[in-house]
Image (tube, rainbow, N blue to C red; front, side, top):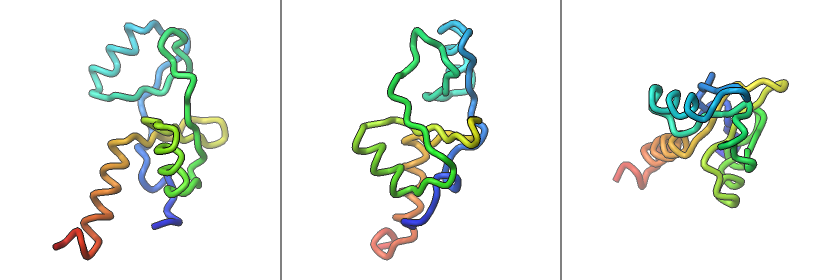
Length: 108
């Protein structure tokens, strides 16, 4: 599992929003699609400057450690300057539940 890449566990083709959109549009998109993370390409008034971006081949071990160390809620996945995915704490919990279900201790 230490060689698993983020591409295997990310949410592909996430919703995103353009830089010229008002915050109200971003809020509406998040409500409509029931999402907590909306990659912004860049809504200035609410944009996080603490964006963690990785390539699809980045290992899950590296991503998990970096997200925990810096308390990031998500990692955006960029391939050739294009947004291709997002990995959130919810995706991380799905991955953890799979790992635990497959482990001998998780089946006890």
